[in-house]
Length: 92
Image 1 (cartoon, rainbow, N blue to C red):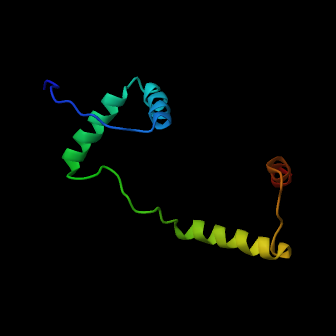
Image 2: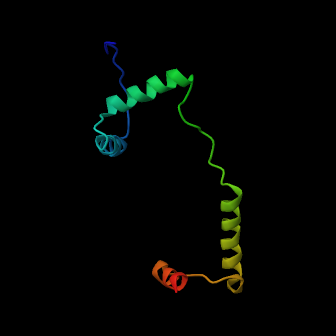
């Protein structure tokens, strides 16, 4: 299908530069990416992604709560300030 319609958009120059670099990794231009977005929007009948905030699963929620408990009371568990130190202890 011939591409004959033009669209003009205003975008923050830094965002444009950033996404050009992202799409260039895939050999695509911003125009290519916008076309993919529009085709996919048409095919799914709406936005091709979910706008809801991500909801962590139960395991992640428990891990977050565990960190909060450890911060509030360091005797609850061992906290590390260095990943290498933690890995040394885990592998020992």
